[in-house]
Length: 280
Image (cartoon, rainbow, N blue to C red):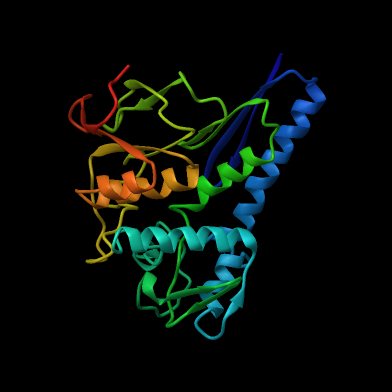
């Protein structure tokens, strides 16, 4: 068995891909390159910062006329709208203007209003009922990890970690370490993987006066001092559901409906405050 581990800066973070398989080094390299190519493609389609991405074109044009989109965009927006419906609007991809105000996204100088209900998806066409700005940063990273895993050999042992969005092909009986949410803490808490995918949201690197978590009802930033990790059947779901778990105090029914579970760790202690799992 051979193992290859590679790391690249993508998706605004570092993406590490580790592959173990009974193949030669060249085959390992080719498999990892194919996985990275999938992630790069999603970044090129769904990045907010680049004005030429498919997402940026939607934000500029979709309120004027229906826009044809790629199969990847159909999958992500479809999942986002399903989550918005299921969570009664807690998950909302139209919070880009609030992220712009905090300097977390670049200003595109558009006047917007509305919410997720103004997004219409029919077949491969997207239409906005009024000018809105969508940001897929809370779901597309996880989706790209799923796509990367999908192009790898099913027999290989694959681990893909995109800045806390994690997917394992052989996750049973595996342990991972979650960093304590307290700023500056080096403490790691070991937990056992409970599904193929895991995503964690915590205020590790965001300035105190800023927050990437936006309440969709007040449109105000939500400051939270905890680590929220979600185990799910896909990384796209895990990524998106961390936002629901942070913003909705009674998040359990939404996660359970999608086969997901959450682990919440207090800022002030290393004990979980809501979890179906015992710490290892």
